[in-house]
Image (cartoon, rainbow, N blue to C red; front, side, top):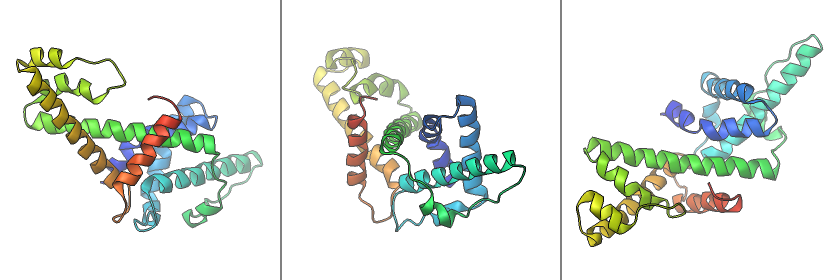
Length: 209
């Protein structure tokens, strides 16, 4: 489950590394190495669900990892080696700038939405309703031009009123899917609605997706 969670949130990690000045190829390699290290060295034990969000933990761990990488590179240039700092020292690693952190949060929010949409896709696939989902999903992105209720009704061979109801139900299901995704990244007593509000604000603060 943790491996799947890490894989899902690879895009914001890779984008964050790119924003630190690394080339795309290096960012891709470092992203893979980061998650490998996270799992192999069992850093996830430090991800205490009672202490905060997985998003925050992951960003702190990523900065810790990148700090280790920079120190190792400098040591190699001097002809010596340096051991990795333990994850317990992560709090002493320099924190990211507010701009970089905001962009990380934005990418994280986009990934949450993508994962939720994928969750809905899988549900409709298991129910044999993919064609219906492909027609209705345009109503989930009101910021982009999509099919009208009349067009949806014609494509599904239903009334316009039924199309409105179907869109309303899908929007509710999408909201539930988003909260389900968020629930996997916050503490057991965390507030999914609060995290959702935070992520939506992260999107609106940095422009449209």
